Length: 380
Image (cartoon, rainbow, N blue to C red; front, side, top):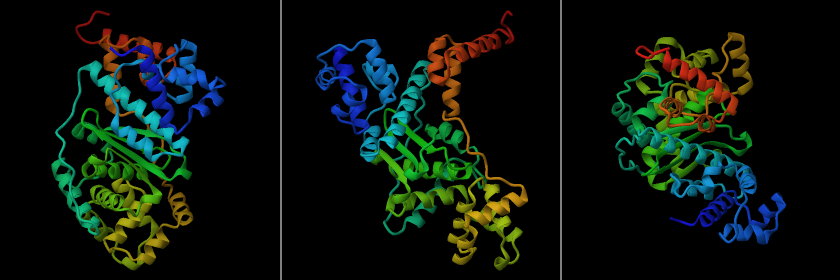
């Protein structure tokens, strides 16, 4: 068994390096002497509980992170932190992402329900043929998942159940240009983070995009999808996969031919109708129609004029789908509540997992206990 001080010191060092901070940075911001902080990281000095709480708050980590002998998350997040070097704000998002995945793994262990569906080796593709291979494997994955040609508005839950992905939603500042993140290792499985700031249609596209990284890029352990990298080979194949996966060509062509008799007379409301049918963003649909040569480059550029589209939506009384959604996967919430009902979680731990105040967890606990008593066969 490792010495408690060494574990705390190693975790403090990992948390600090993940945010790209020096010991001097931490000592200055927390107003403690650098020699003292250095001794703590090296396992040479004990840490009072009040100081450990300060460190936890500063690093954005739960107390458990610094005292547990074994972490469930590991290699994939180290890759993500390396990719955020120099950007503390995005690194803190990765920190919260890792915390959530750690909690999800812990819930699976507590519940005795650790589901790891069989995982295929990464699909291979040829450079400069990203569009072809993205379409090929998007069609293949739809068949594997038995999805037919239907829209995929419940994609999060579907991928949680059938591929064992852990999918979370957190806001990332728009100026960072980050759409999503993906990480994978055999012990933890696949974890996905989606930027919750864009509208639902954009979030859905990002989810399909990160799923593409799951089928193509597991060996890379961690990927951050950014605006500046969108022309890279990996991002091109992921975009092709997402577009074809969400908007099957045959279904789109059928709808297009039924609704639009004259291509030169296509209107914004036509694209809005198609976008809403598939649950994607207006922009994603405009690009998809253009990629399939159903509309010209000129029409596509006119369609994605933001002001024009917004005014048309307003005049039609159709708003973009809502942005807000829970940061937690459906399965995460299910496991937390079920573990509490089975007596495997205290009220305090339930509050921690659901990230709610203790009084709110106590109220929820009373309601949950009441629901158990009211079930058939239980005495009231």
